[in-house]
Length: 175
Image 1 (spheres, rainbow, N blue to C red):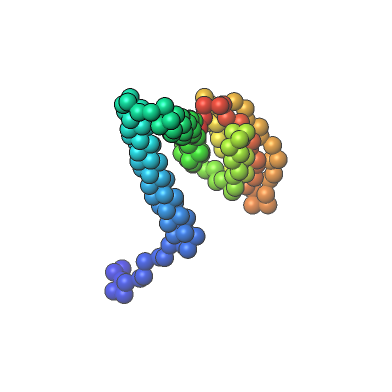
Image 2: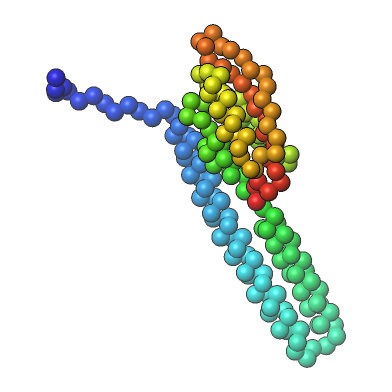
């Protein structure tokens, strides 16, 4: 049967739009921050080179001591920034990890990620104990995981299983 009157397309829920635009905003801010910090690092490096060149010229002792202080100040700033830049942890890796290890029949109801302890707490829901077992085996096969704890398993009225997982990652997970 052919319908003559077209039906309107279903609208995307508001929360999905908000999350999408928030994710895009955070991505843009992250990229912009990277370029801004890189620009300031290059600017500081050029200033350091200029100060070092000025030091090499014949100047009085007083001027040399002033320039040395500036050089050490810039060197310290560059060292501080480099340390921060190279020890930066990519917390966003947790989303890719969750996406890659989620069983097709598992739904995550909530998660909490403690960056300082590298601990991920998940509350999930699945349709059977078999699926729960498969999800656990998927997680157990990951090299980045040091320890997995499965606890608080509940059987809901609809026959679905709600469970909690606590995952501890090794120290190289976010690098």
